[in-house]
Length: 345
Ligand SMILES: [Zn+2]
Image 1 (cartoon, rainbow, N blue to C red):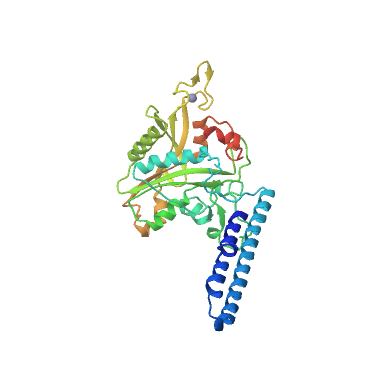
Image 2: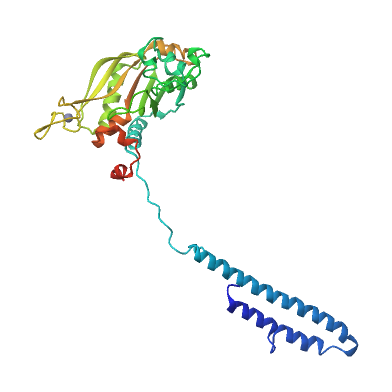
């Protein structure tokens, strides 16, 4: 019963003098009753009359209440729900450039048969440093670079908690769980005690990879990474490897790709190409053959350094996104300014 009109139809059906249900009950039951039953039938008809009148009054209250609620909702700017009306469309966000870069790079390695591995951001000294062959006095362990969790002096050093400074602890954690052969790619956030500026942020993103099997060589490393960079930046990029040092790989290298902005010429028209500093090459990642000392920590799970070998690589997702999208300040990635992010919508 929605309104007064409905209610009147309802009322008249029961109470109209001409042909309403009560009138008919009166005519057909009471008047037709034999005289000895008139009193009893009269009482029953009266009872029915009371009930009908109560029902009709209740129905009136009901539709009046509904009308009041509607009026209140209208006054407050609320409208009774109508599911047939078109909905309010929320604006769909855009994939963040760093997330987009990460996903694209991860997909390149997934196509090569790598699976995605994950691990905690709050790590122990053991997984972040010790098991990755960082000597006890290596500068990366210094509080200048690493954000340690406070109040842990009572714990042995290897159990102390810190914010992981690289995604490499996931390599050890995965090797503890899975036996070789292994091919994993590890995207994730890492933290360093770097004051924020145009090229540094205390929180940033890495993408790492690890491949372990019997007879993995530096040739496999070069072939895999060369193929991956061509997939990611385009088939015309060239790669170049230069010797470097990392505690957990031996030998180690830095990989450069030919500048995908100036095509390797070092110039953009008459201007110098800034991203490659006019060299025609951009340093893109660190890599190397897994140091046998690292395998010693997971030897019991099938990683005997005399039987298996492997390569590892790591790159900064933010840096690649900066280069790819021509952004000159890493802070823009983390300020959440919709005007900046909308450019990739
Ligand atoms: Zn260039």
